[in-house]
Length: 291
Image (cartoon, rainbow, N blue to C red; front, side, top):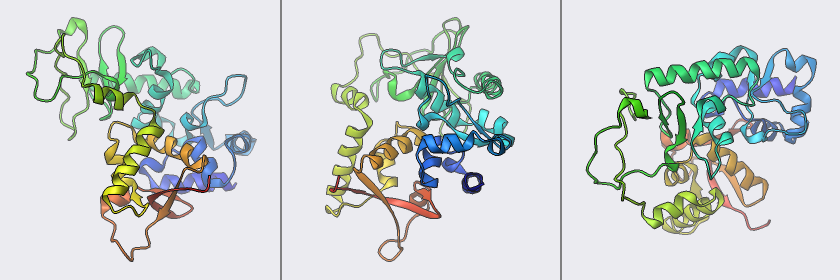
């Protein structure tokens, strides 16, 4: 089965390559998500492969937030940062960016849902979260993206952490050290208007602005590294960044290219920021003008 081979090759790459979303797997195999989902519904595929969410019925989950994984990897995926980020992204709304723990497993396959819920509870006990997420513990824990939170301005004096009865905020430590509570924001504090507008802007607008600025600084050659663009949008989880960029590529707004190594020796960080497709490591972004 060709799709199984593609999936296993993505697992060998590791990192952000596995498990791929249904959308990503379809892109790698040269089919549409609908065709790919149909192929994965065969008896042969079901014996080896799982979709994190069902794709039948009237309400179909977005291919960009449905993961495709080998059945043997269910437990590892349940414990992964990627699944947590994707589930939060699917459950949050602009009006309700904080999501209760009970809502996060919704839509997942029953076995994956149970393992995922247990993994989240373990994260809370260990005060361990991805860099992009925060949480308020208590009887009904709430999870949110740090980008959605209103935090104290840089240099603001720290306030005592909230009492445990109110729920202690969790956030990710950059070096794997024990997590600490976030300070309470001053009641009269407000985010800088420019910062608030930037965080609320759609991904496409932010990506366009970041690309234009970086390309201009580099001499206007219409070639910007994925590493530089990820660094310019640090609040966006990698899985979400890749899914949104894939949508821009389908709209023929941007293309990705590999490095030939002749003009620039890629640093390790630049390679790590790339996207692998059909054996090629794509590290450059170019804006298309033929849409």
